[in-house]
Length: 300
Image (spheres, rainbow, N blue to C red):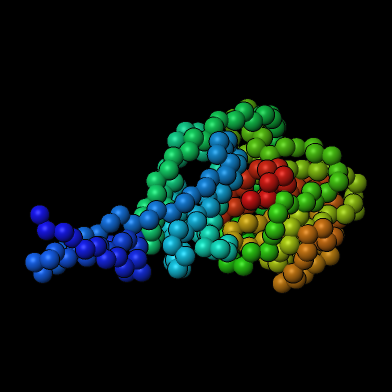
């Protein structure tokens, strides 16, 4: 049997990932080409056992130090924006909500390196329910202008990341309504409704601070037709993370301003559809209202 000489060229590409090309040369002079398996991405999922309302952070480490292509991350075949976070690492944020079915989520990472398929179980979670009786005409609050501006804000996914670490509590008031509460209106269960944030009850004018650094992307006032949300501030924290503050008594920022974590941006109020002075803080990830509480302790 003739001996073989193996020569590798690790910087050459093979197929969909960076593989190892093996040139097999026999002493008889024949040349054969073999392709070793490509290296696979290293993937971390946090939290490893998410429940409804959690944000799932998918962190991808490229094994090849020369990898520059941003990998594609999908969850149950839906793609999510992925951004570089340094040291050949990339991150995608996958939102969940009380409207999602609990069960298995298949997360797929593909790009220059070998595709990874991972499964995570999304746990069920019990959310309290409320029964609300609406008077005739009270369900028609809100203007087209208001809805269009808020919808455009929630769709923002900008590349610059402003936030760093855990988010701050935006008000020192007591929590009066938790995230995720479901409701019956006039005895009928609202299938598409859940409380999309956390409410803090506090005195009118009490300070409201930015929970993280960001750019003011939305300022809406009652005088401009914000009759449902009341005086409103929307902060773009970058990479699909957004905060919206509603029912404010005053606004101390302008659209386009860049704010820092802890900076006072307005005051607690009862404008819009509100039964008393409180701050409603909604936190959105890629257009879905997620539970803000884990963000205050983990920060992703």
